[in-house]
Length: 126
Image (cartoon, rainbow, N blue to C red; front, side):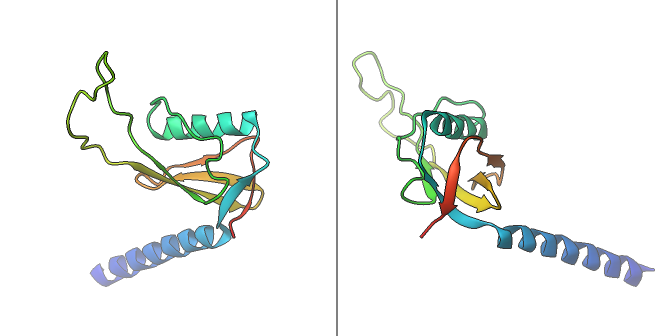
């Protein structure tokens, strides 16, 4: 009985791995082409959603030159503009952009969460 359970478990794990590999195989690193105010807003919203609603400020050329993006946490400052803490221990967040068919998908590296970007044109990165 134990051998049957182990064989079934191994088969289930193998099929999950195969499905994941097929999904990844269809995706390619991508960059945004012809960015618009609407596509930039969609990207900023997706990054904010990935960071649990934290406000974000992104450069207008985010994902237009490369398929990766690193977002650092804003440092809290006092009224004079000096950092409140001498040391920032927060780790930056890493994102990548992939193209799957006609979709541009933002992937949050730490969590694996995926966000389809509306109103955004992307092409395979060079």
